[in-house]
Length: 430
Ligand code: BJ8
Image (cartoon, rainbow, N blue to C red; front, side, top):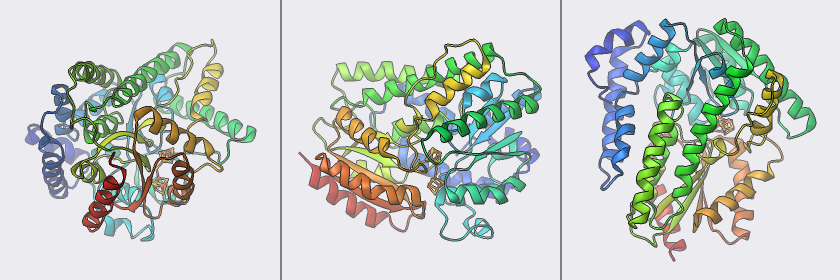
């Protein structure tokens, strides 16, 4: 992407150790993709301009903000999973950034460490780091990995050595009493790590403030997602996805205000029956693996097929947004329990069994008036690929057709996906 006045940032990127030639090539490719996927859309909400600006500066101004904050004594913490509580990072006045990557880059370099049959998301963050094109990973004071799927768990054994400081969070596999106790212990241990990193104590006031900030951020995105129930739907699926992707990078308070501004505009659009496509279009819920920025592969295919995307049952979507953390309590331990109350309900497919997820997909389909569900799994992602069989069986039993897609970040299968999506859209058309 153009990144504002890129010449201003070259010294910053060089200081971060980026490979400027490769980084230029990446930004050029992303800029073109952004133009094709986003800026070419007709009749977008005016308030999306903020997000266009953020994306135009995602490797520029935002990275500079992080470095300025670091210079002022704040710490930057990179994460790969919605189980890592941003509230705790804020409690020590830290800044959390998502490091998952959504583009094919540096695959050959990544495959020096990872088997070919590793999911694209893992290969991508390896590739970005090994090819020295990710200013976020380079800027982090601490990178947090978590023992979720086997791919991430084992790949962190290599990745930990590629970053300044790495921390591994253990994760339960079952929603049992022992699982909950493990998560509680891990959140306490993470709080201590953050205290040591920042030289600040996690206090009741600091943690409560962090909880309020993140509750407000999640509430704003939930509000946005609820507005997508309208027919005609007031915002395109790709714009809604972009907003949710940006939530992992932007300053949370500024981001919340910007999302609420979009929601205000969408409410006016709904009142005027102004939609991103005419009313009555087939409505699709996407469910499955997270689509990390700049993974914009599937939404344009679905929307070009004449359907509208009304929601994402994903960690970059409602799975990562449901439920508030209570601010009640007057001890840090009590507030950490509140975090566990919320986070332990996240229905990631790395848990077994994971029946809540299917209930949530059905609930979302009902609330958003979805005519069909596209289950999106990355190839070699066993948790979501295996779970997709149950999703298909049980969601279809409830009367909502499901299309299962397994794909990666490459473009080789785009035409095949297009054919399958078009056939599905035809099948569910009312
Ligand atoms: S809470 S979904 S963010 S683990 S796609 S790397 S699962 S092989 S990303 Fe996730 Fe946390 Fe769960 Fe959400 Fe592994 Fe699958 Fe790859 Fe994945």
